[in-house]
Image (cartoon, rainbow, N blue to C red; front, side):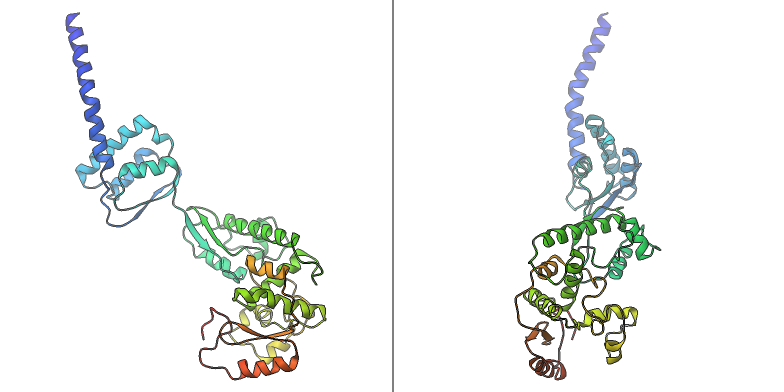
Length: 352
């Protein structure tokens, strides 16, 4: 009996000594900065267990040399035993910066602070350009590859709708493995919300009677100017022309109707060639939007400027000259179009 008491007492003493020593041992290797000279990404795939995760870190050299890796591995195992982090592994990418410790990384994983990536759809892009941008992203899951535009819209719950104009240009954040359909769905829902809100607050007596026609107008405004202060005036000119029964005669619609035939130039024959989008030939608005209009262009379509102008021409610096009469417009064409100076550009972002 006395021998058992002495052994029990010895065990108690060892535990009292071992716990703080072990704690210090764990703290030392978990708190030390990982051997990184530059930021690296750590990926936790679905089904990855805690031991596999530590093995991958060790294989990639993120835990240091053999001795450091061994100590960090067992330190992390002990840390997991006390905290239960092994059962709370959040799938995703994690960014590890120089100076970060293994404990810092484990804390991020425990809290699910996965890396947020981003993709930007630019104001004025068409749907073909949006699809090309998505196809070039290697961090998303591709679900629309090989599908027609019509099939994509069906997958998005918009069967029979033309895709142009229905996706809000903006920057969208996502995590690795997000599908292209998910990103398109978010852009579609945002554009629908923007359009619904703007339509509810629109000016009265507009020459278009549905939100979709307003979206078409907004897309034309988007393509005609990149100068924020001009959008409402551009919309005002087009509204005036619609009210007077004049053709819109806007080049971006011609370009859209030309499709892949467009090589950077519009010829007289292109202006005369009938297409559903050639507003030099058709009356009124084209059948669909011609681009993805941003919020500002949609607002301009809903609140066009009160102007007497019926014409405008690019000055060559990205802005436009507005005219009330055809004679004034013809003079502006001579001044700004027929006598183009070096560096001429029709929009702010254009190359000369």
